[in-house]
Amino acid sequence: MTLKKSLNGIGIFHTVMEIDPGEVIYCKADGSYTDICLRTGRVCKISHNLKSVSGVLPANRFLRCHRSYLVNKHAITGFDILGRKLVLDERFTVPVSRRRLEGAACRRRV
Image (cartoon, rainbow, N blue to C red):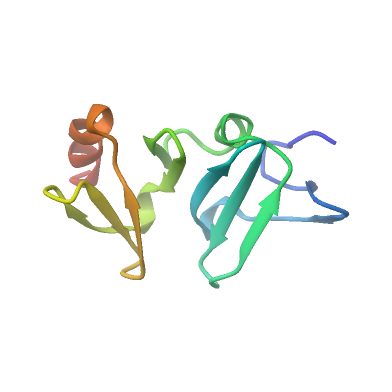
């Protein structure tokens, strides 16, 4: 199975489902798999690595803030610069690597 541009038809183990990129809050790497956290609170594990997922999501909408995390820029509601964490939808926090700290802080203001 291959990833399609709109995340339609992603193989989630033995099922296929459509995921609207606007519903994705963040994606977390889990080895050769990726956990996709949706606005509904549901987490889907797909059998593609984070690099493959980042290649099909809109680059202008998603930010790679850490080697293990890809976040929806529209879901960022806060930024803890001392703790190096992004707050997403006021419910989730994800780490920001030192290397990507400045880029994440700048993109938050956009």
